[in-house]
Amino acid sequence: MNQHDNVLADFEDTETAFAGKSTWQLRESFAVFKLFGIQSIIYIGTKIIVLGLKFKLPITWLVKYTIFKQFCGGTSIDDCEAAVDQMYKYKVGSILDYSVEACEREEDLDQVADEICRTIAKVVESEALKCSVFKMSGIITFDLLQRVSSQEQLTKKHQELWDRGVQRLDLICKYAADRKVPLQIDAEETWIQPAIDNLAEDMMVKYNTEKVIVYNTLQMYRHDRLAYLKDWYAKVNGSYKLGVKLVRGAYMEKERLRAEQLGYPSPIQSDKESTDQDFDAAMMFCLERLHQVAVFIGTHNEQSTLKAVDYMRANDIGASDPRVLFSQLYGMSEHISFNLAKHGYQVAKYVPYGPIKSVLPYLFRRAEENSSIKGHAGRELELLSREIVRRKRLV
Image (tube, rainbow, N blue to C red):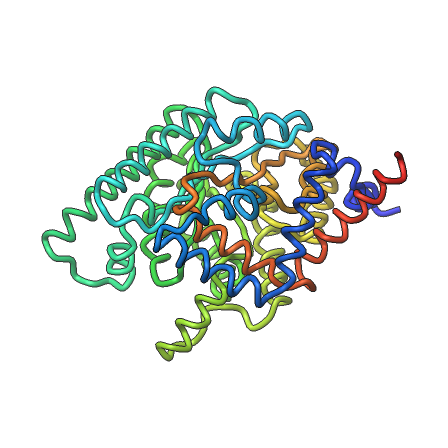
């Protein structure tokens, strides 16, 4: 028997995966993922939601009790408490994400920074919360991030706004470092990512000298990220510790469309197999260098998860080692999250929250990535259906 066979078998254990959910909740989730299998409905539905909110039609309730309920913890930190506590009964932690992005007004940017600090403070209070996370476009305008990424010469006014944004970032990172709370900076679109990468590295120089506080996120559906990781590690040369968050990515269609429209080579891998190969290669690169790297493995891929488990077991890396954290999105891949936690691995659900209108970009990305019945939604439907049938047989 392979050393991961018991974990592999448990990925089929729907009783553990859905232990915290009622049969009614399972049926609700089944309906949402079933809906995602109809691409035309997703396309038309997102357009209707945007128009409905624009013209102030009573459509918020529809979003709140369907896609929002499936993928978000609530509209506020306190609103998420019930979901966080319920998951922690099964040793599955949480990461609160105030999912507001692409703010424009200075007062909105300040408000987001304050909210991020509140999530950091909440981590200190609750052992169920593992770290904090945010998007740079929530505290520095998208326009400024794009200007700096393209190495544009900033005007005096833009420079002042940039300096204010960097001050917000440093305040957040210092707040986290003073409280020893890990802080993840999410990846965003490729045309603003260079500025985000540079800012993340600057913060690591300041705050990752003794332990990893700041993490930068690499989207491995980009064909250049594995090389970036290796070059970054070599450049640092042990001067500080690297915090690496690995995900496959969330902007694929948007990236390809922009590249086609503007006539530059697509930054996206040519196929899914290439993405999987680079994700696994980056994951192993980090696991082999835990003396210098802490890695956040954000994946819904069972095989990638098993590769990490295999390596940890073969190299006597404890399941509870704080340098390795597995994560899946709230409302997805319960079979991975809850069964890993059952075996003692460090697992945390990524739990977005915020005003419904503000989290729509996040929700639309979830709808897009689940819109193929042959993809992840198909696996979710299979497991949900199996657990519903299992419970019926017990009655």
